[in-house]
Length: 125
Image 1 (cartoon, rainbow, N blue to C red):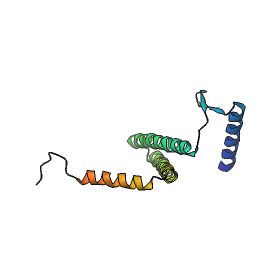
Image 2 (image 1 turned 45 degrees about the vertical axis):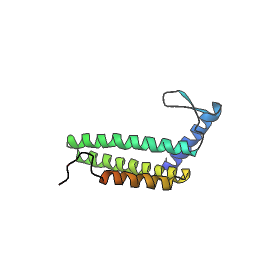
Image 3 (image 1 turned 30 degrees about the horizontal axis):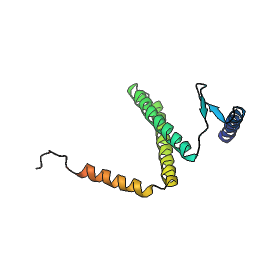
Image 4 (image 1 turned 90 degrees about the vertical axis):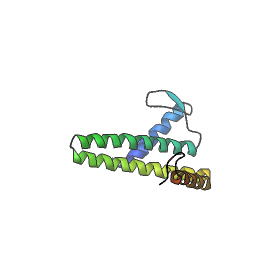
């Protein structure tokens, strides 16, 4: 089965499950949860889980490196990079859809300025 066929099958299974449960879905542990209200929540979920995955895969990669398994470490770093790219893409979508591009740029500029300022009480040469 191709990846596309698998996604379509998975999506249909989830849609049928949600429909048969009166609009609610069940999580991995079988707990009932409400469906997501909008695309913003979906993007937040993708961003959150991609960041979690990236952190976890980095840990796995470091463990593989420590055990001397270079091939596995390389694979895990690639998977980790995929998750970082997925998180970045979700963040870009979210920023765009929320219309906060200017605010994000302003906050990033302030953060850079704070990093460049000498710390209070630090001695100067």
